[in-house]
Amino acid sequence: MASFPPFVNENDIATSQSIGDLINRATPFDKKYGCENWTVAFAPDGSFFAWSQGHRIVKLVPWAQCLNNFAVDVDQNIINSGNPKLSRQNSDGGQKMKPCEHTIDCGDLVWSLAFGSSVPEKQSRCVNIEWHRFKFGQDQLLLATGLNNGRIKIWDVYTGKLLLNLMDHTEVVRDLTFAPDGSLILVSASRDKTLRVWDLKDDGNMMKVLRGHQNWVYCSAFSPDSSILCSVGAGKAVFLWDMDKYVMIRKLEGHYNDVVACEFSPDGALLATASYDTRVCVWDPYTGCSLLEFGHLFPAPSPIFAGGANGTWVRSVAFSHDGVHIASLADDKLLVVLDLCSANKINCMNTFLSPLSSSLCFHTLLRFWRIDKNHPVEVVSLSKGLCCAFSTDGSVLAAGTQDGNVHFWATPKYVASLQHLCRMSIRRVMTTGQVKKLPLPPKMMEFLSYQII
View 1 (cartoon, helix red, strand yellow):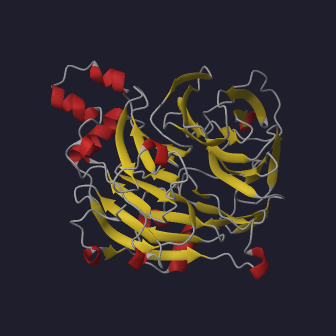
View 2: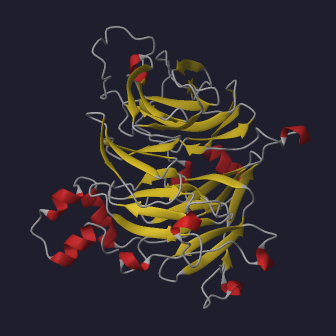
View 3: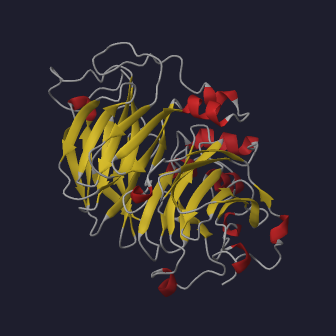
């Protein structure tokens, strides 16, 4: 296996800009099992950043405060990304004070985090809404934490107050995701092989149990319109669910190993899944077709080798909010950011990487990619990475590590084409099937259905 294609000169690869770090000040004894940072999350309005420091602790920090502490010249739209139209309130209906930092002791190891925001026009799906303990009908920002003991705890972000304690899972809650429509519908994915749907506006009532996985469920993700849920897990499982009827739509087949992460593009037209088979696959969720493959070994490993302990497990994937970049985090310690709009053909986007050459093994690397170059354009060192996430506007990438720390980098600068912006606008409101019914030339049809980038 080779690290890069033979035409690549590693000395020509630039170094990416580091924005800052959040360091877990743990004692030497704590830097053993239990200090892992399994999850990082940005609030939907960009107001807060949260990460699990290990040993039951979650840290909540105002994102603007982070940027000010980093003392880096960044875009003001990150700092002022909070929506001025939203008057944040607590669960008792009182007006909120200025955002402040909180350290939350969750009582057990934290495996998953998710921010949820409420809007008044989204009502609870429950039948009896005459009395509720909490007034979640008003604008609200919540943090859900999934724990090692199977519990889910819901916190008020602005006060750090515990609001709800949800108990029904029998194993680790590996992932949490809120519906992005402001309904405060929460989906939890667990090692007990189930997904559970909770209505927080109905005081955390569990609405539905989604069964179908035969092994651990690692991750789940909502489509931008909240109509589809993707869940992935052990045994090569990638399932799509109709969240209006709570039924499975289809299974996506193509991975050779456990699938551990998934995320939709901001227009909902693409779905990225990360697997231990060394690949990130990009799908059309409406047809089930595999559109792209981003490999992490060069040349591509055989299915038998990819399905085992290949040494290059992909652990995390994130879609940037600009619809252009994807980030993936692999055991070869390469954090890969790919520019979807750089290639003319969707079939040209297969780039396979092996672990680093011996000259670079001392430093693990964060890689930023432009597909038109077929090799990294920027690199930066990274150690013991476990998870990654883009900031709300996609200008910053955060990665959590095994020692409870978080590292931040500026993402590559890219000006999206007018074609891409128009395509995203159309695909936000139209499915692939609806697009194919339009009286359009074949080339335009292929472009709108992401068969041509």
